[in-house]
Image (cartoon, rainbow, N blue to C red; front, side, top):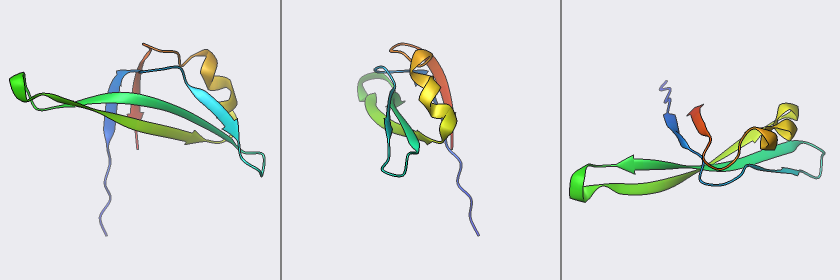
Length: 73
């Protein structure tokens, strides 16, 4: 059995948004830039992050554009 873990850190590219599913669960969505390579070969990709659960309905207050965050998943 293999377990993979990723750790992303960076400044949010936009404000966090939340929505409800049809069953009433909250989903928070935000994006993080991830840089790969170095020098002239540096490339930026955007990672879309989603969080589920009741605590996520309060996140947009704290997760605004430019906020430094670390995501482990």
